[in-house]
Structures are given as C-alpha cells and as structure tokens.
Length: 510
Image (cartoon, rainbow, N blue to C red; front, side):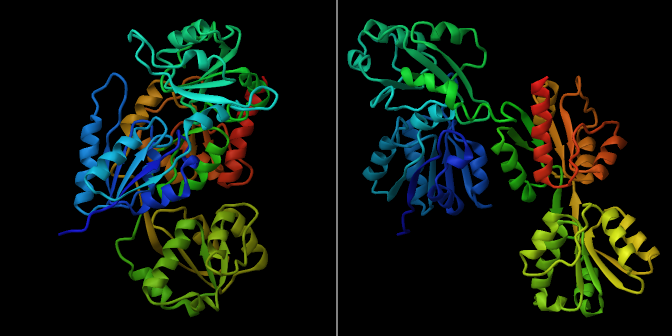
C-alpha cells in the first residue's frame, strides 16, 4: 500500500507577496500539488517547482465555483496518491477561511495534515491603510465578524448590541452588505458619527481606502468605482489614525502599473525594488536565456584559459553561463589564475565577486565605451582577450579592442530569444485600455523584442511612460520610433527605480 501524502493548509496572507511566511514559502517549493484560491496572489506560484501540479479552485462571487465538498475530496484524492499537497488559502486558513472544515475532512479520511498560519487580513489590511486596531488613546478592545451575513434572514445571528459597545469592529468581506451592517450598528446604539473606513484589495498595489462615518460610509462608497469586493470595513475611533499613519498609499509609485520586460531569471530584484515603492508590477519577460547551439567555441576557450591576459564580462548572463560551463568541464576558478578580469556594470562585477574572484576593472560608465576608454588609457596592445557573451550583441567592444592592438576571441556562451509563450494578448489589452503607466527596458534586446511582439504600440499623451536603463537601450527604442522619458545617469536597476520614483514625485508636485 502506497504511503499517504501530507496536506499543508497554508495561509498565503492577504495579497502582498512579502506577507507569506517563510515556512509557507518553503512548503510551496517542495509541494507536488498546489491548490489555491481566488484571493491568493498568483505570483506566489513562482515558488512552485517545475513539475508541480497547480490547481485553481477559486471562489469568486457571481461566478461558477468548485464546492467546498469537491475541494475536500480533491485534497483527499491527491494525498492518497502519495503527493505532498500545499493548500494555499488567502489570509489565515482558520480565520473565516474554512480551513477547519478542510482539516476535519482530512482527519475523517485519516490523511496527515498540518496547519501553517498566515497573516490575516483582519490586522494586515487596516495596518496597510494606516489604521491601528487598538491604541491606548482610543480603545483596548476589538472584535472581528463576517460582513457577509445574509441580509434576508429574519433574524441576524450577530450580537449587534455587544458589537456596538466594542471599541473597534472589523467586518471581513464587508462591502456587499455595508449599508445593512452600518444600519444595524446604529440601531444597536452605535454613535452614527463614529469614524468608519472601507479598504478594498488591501495590501495589493490596487488598494483603495475610503473613510467616513457609520452613518454616511455606505453612501460615500456608492459614489466610488474603486470600492468593491474584496473589502474590509473598520469601525471605531482608531480610523482617525489614518491621517497620521498612512504609509502605504503614500509611497511614490503607489497606484502606478509598471511592465517589467527583463528576463524572468533576472527580474526578481527589479520587481522587488519597484514594489517596495508601491508599484503594481506586471512581469512581461521579452527575453529567454537559452544555451548556445554548440559549446564548442566556449569549451575551446575554457580549455585554453592560460593563454588569455583578460576575460571581459559584459553581463550577468555572461558570467553565469561561463562559470556554469567551467563546472561542467570539471574545472574551477583556479583556471583563471593568469587572466585579469574586467566587467561592465556593478551588477556584473558583483556576480563575479560572488564567485570569489577579484574584478580588476569596472568602468564608471556602465557600457562598452567606458571600458574602451580605460583600456585605451592603460594600453592593451598584444594582449589576448576573451569575451564570453550572447550570440547577438554590439560589436563596438571587440572591434575597438582590436584597433587598440589586442587579439580578441568572442565566444557565444548563451543565446537570447523572444519567448515562445508570452502574455502578449493580455499586455495589448491593458495598453489598449490605457491601464499601463510605465514600461521599463533594461537592455536593447528587451526593447527590440517588445516592439517586435507589439508592433502597433502607441503612446497616448506620453502614457505609458518609457524608462530605459541607459543610452544604448534608449537608442534602440528610438529606432522603433519611440523615446524614453526616463534614463538614469548610472545604468543599474536600482538607479533606474530611483529615477522612476523621482519622475513621478516631480509630476505630483506640479
């Protein structure tokens, strides 16, 4: 008899990827099956291993959904086959998440399970709106109730009189029945002038917060198109704190939708930098990094490293592919004892340093021309230079070094190509609906592939804004008939992010 798998009921948090617990992340990385809900940030699925089975069982109001009974049966079925199952639920599985029902169903069938608590929207969503549930100047008590009680019931099961006496009341799923719930609070004795807030899509970059009072919050919500489910309602004097503690919605890129075209393997840090500043990021990698058709030239160069005076790395991908191949050939960094190392850009240099190798030259100007100036000054005549790089790249560096008297070997260590599967239709729809504020390009290849994938791209009154990591990429953008409004003075994703934030800060001051 095959061994039963274990089901992990994991709280995914309310939306922000960073609110997933470390234990939850590690379980996603080893799970054979991931079963996830509507309110789960689907970017958490990036943690899944390549061969994981991913099943969506989302429950969204007004749409056909998988019943709870069917979900329970699915978890049991997958575990009986010996799979490690990650049941990923929004917020915390035991806080209005029906996690208890799923655990009961697993126990009934003697399926091993574990509970991995998550950050609940009860506390996280008000916190992201700048509202502290308790504060000694206002209240030391709070209650949490569902806001989704059926208003057609003859008698409510809620203890409204008790709720009216509690300092802070949090209604989860509270938008649909907002008017009825506020009326019931008032009828139970709550002061109609008590502050109230509605927070929708809390902790997401699309978060919206509306404040008012118990008596007028429902009328105010009707006038706002951005107030819709899912939402959390907070009632209490603590809502006044938002004027002081609003930290999330005041971020420089809050409310801005940004497309990142960088390769998936390299985009994580850039996305984090943008999201830290409040942006809603849409990954749209226009490049895939793949091995060369043949390693013959690279292998020959690696087997003759003692003959090179310099090895020049022009990108992080060049570094990774070179050292990966070094390992495949059963060699290590000792093979580089004779050659000096040059790198274009801080990020490339740091990648080399992570291998335990000192970088001899990094030009202040993070492009080929900066390196050429340094070699021209110091001299490179009669030196033998190896440049492992992409198959298609600018020839200015090797040609210039040859003119300076160097012997140059350019070998292909990786290939960049347009992805075979992309979200082009989705991106085109967003662009047509004018829902994209900014597009970022971190190389000429990302720009070239983007405009070839979307040849009809147009800007509507300079929206979306185009940001280029440097002048070379900006030149490629111009070749397609467009121009970059943002170009940092230092060509790194950190400086590009800061320049983007400065751009919108200046616009907001006008």
